[in-house]
Length: 321
Image 1 (cartoon, rainbow, N blue to C red):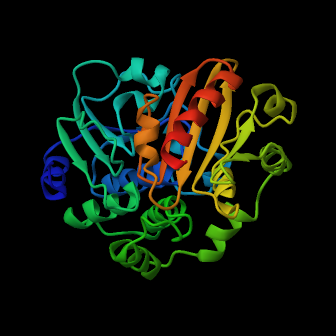
Image 2: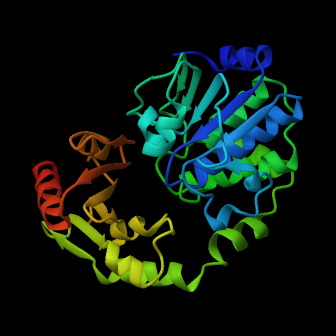
């Protein structure tokens, strides 16, 4: 693995970067992307940001969010690509992967245990709570002044990926990073207002739809929820990211593994996995071509909702029962 100091030196020596984040972006993805972008710009580097999917509305208030380019805007990619929070190159999405194909110098910064180390430079720290935590450390190595805008972006990344510092990935380094960002003036009321107190009716209907589908087996050790494409379309929530909804499965007493089956389009099912205790859901997700962390992972499968549920639940039963 390459050190952050090595990557910092490369970023100092080179110019013209395209920062790339994964499809269906979450808070860590957005926070890392914006934090590094603002940091590079502050020292005079030329940089752009690219994602296949739009920035979710709840992160639209963050400085720089309006500068993220989509597939129709990005044009010719830069020679230097920096992948953030991506366990592999395909994580950017099919459309983005085609755009980014070619002979680029690639830097890979991530914290997922399933990362394939696909870059020319790779810094993958599975002990880190979030990629945003790593970006903070990288900017420190580069002696970049952490502005309030950078702090706001990185704090959101750390906060969201640790579930508000509740997940087991939270460690002393995480809390030191959060404290340093708060020292820069992060407005917690602003964070709370945008992340938790500005939900649309469609978002609440999506939560209601998921909760209404909740089911379990093995004496509630396995709990899952379902979001069918046509049901989500009916409540006009297809463009929403159901971030955090899956965590409700682990609120069930006795639950060891929770899952969310979401039909992204007819026949394309994304399965999210969460666990508490001894079950490694990254290993489970890997059985289906996915990956992630010990207690939070995901995979995308093709087939009917019924068939995929049956196969996945059987696999989970084999490690839980």
